Length: 247
Ligand code: F6R
Image 1 (cartoon, rainbow, N blue to C red):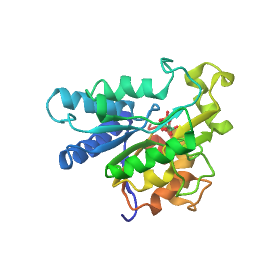
Image 2 (image 1 turned 180 degrees about the horizontal axis):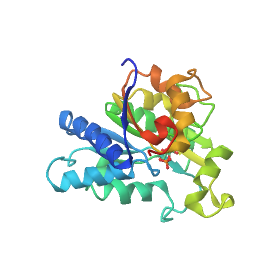
Image 3 (image 1 turned 90 degrees about the vertical axis):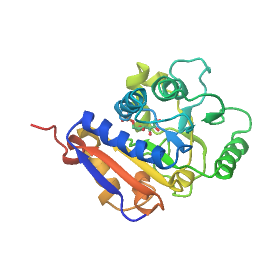
Image 4 (image 1 turned 60 degrees about the vertical axis):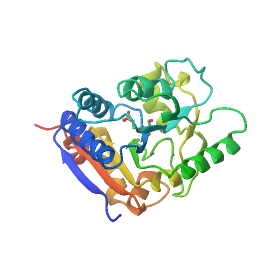
């Protein structure tokens, strides 16, 4: 509600702390919170910090539900490169979240029908309490690639060249990156009660400024954060906010 709250921090360690503070506050207020979980590099320190707080008894994740944000299409379920595998290693396992407390995206069958059913199920269980998101260098949230309208539902998408190039670092070479994926839509994401966007590194400078200060529209999907009903917190490190590494 209102403008995003922008929290600038000096470095990745401070980003992990500040991000974990937001997640911990959500869970303290709503122990059975439904939390959308991004993968990608940026939130990894945050997840480690949360796990450390859980081990110290400072955060209780025993009742939260974790919701998958996005996934590649066309991989074998046991492929280590699935985003679900990454989510399991970085979030579900360290926080001991399992069974019915994990909500996965549909990946086969009649995808349009299955994605619509996913959105209905999300709504029926009370919607998203907190979406933890990273920012693509092209302005994507999840795999809501530009252009995406603010009401876009959960659906199968074709990845842009920019995203395929950016993700090639995880795959070895560009030709190996899957070109299709499923993502929670901007519509359901922007309907969350709270959104935490974490942004790190000088390579994100131009896009984080465009998202928060440029025109709002489908060409920069993250710009719609400024028109969502959610309580939006953007935790951004110095390098991303200023476009330069700290001296
Ligand atoms: C990952 C995801 C992506 C990433 C974004 C930033 O599940 O949905 O939108 O959050 O591409 O990735 P990193 O953090 O690796 O720069």
